[in-house]
Length: 141
Image (cartoon, rainbow, N blue to C red; front, side):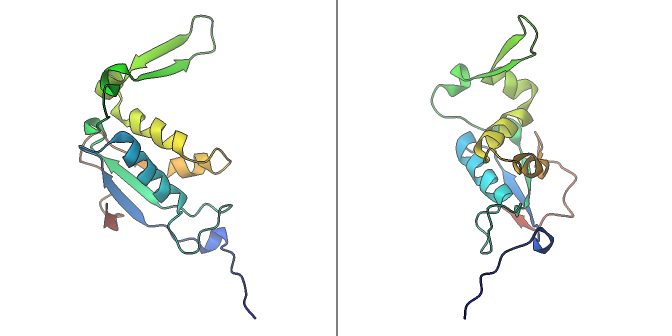
């Protein structure tokens, strides 16, 4: 008789991955990062258990976008006050807050459920190549 094994949160082992996004396309990198955060490639993947790994993203300031998105893509937010709507072009966002570009792309690619914020806490984004997670890193993507 075969038994089904269900992974429990206590049994999850998390690895550390480093992803270099210099000269990489934003959307393709975000899907790769989201897959690592979810843990979907693991053999004992269970959708209701947070099984993902830690991901360190470096060179976020050098991420590329296709076609005319560098000039046309806009990021929107609202302060919930009258007249509080703010739109920021991609070029300005890349100059001031390059980490937020990757963060927003990955956040929107994760499943919209209760595990999303836990998964986002394991995402570490740096504009340059230097970071403080050298001792934890296991693999380089």
